Picture 1 (cartoon, rainbow, N blue to C red):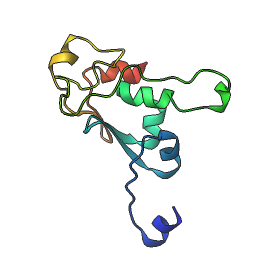
Picture 2 (picture 1 turned 120 degrees about the vertical axis):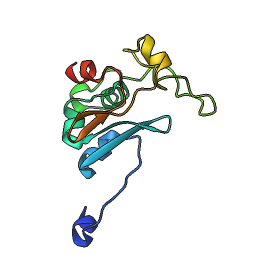
Picture 3 (picture 1 turned 90 degrees about the vertical axis):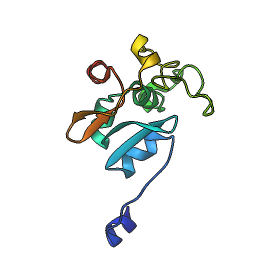
Length: 128
């Protein structure tokens, strides 16, 4: 953060640990199977994720107020990149998947001016 301020530079951080990202990033792009599935300012993403994968990542962060409780884990395994599923690549692991998810690749829809979500049902996800 000091170097960023001193040299007025940007930083790209690639990580699976959204707990680390909160202190470093202004904007986040969440990827799944090589594709951006959500973009948002950091505070908006943590407050109300608009993609089920992002929601699962956030729920899996260890928290002090849940000490001693079992950590949440996204069910299933990431796809084989040589055989990415048709439609939304996350659908085999998604608790909200429906028929359209299995056949149609969702576009990165504009949630608002600063946010995007590649989920057919982002409105339901963000409101959950």
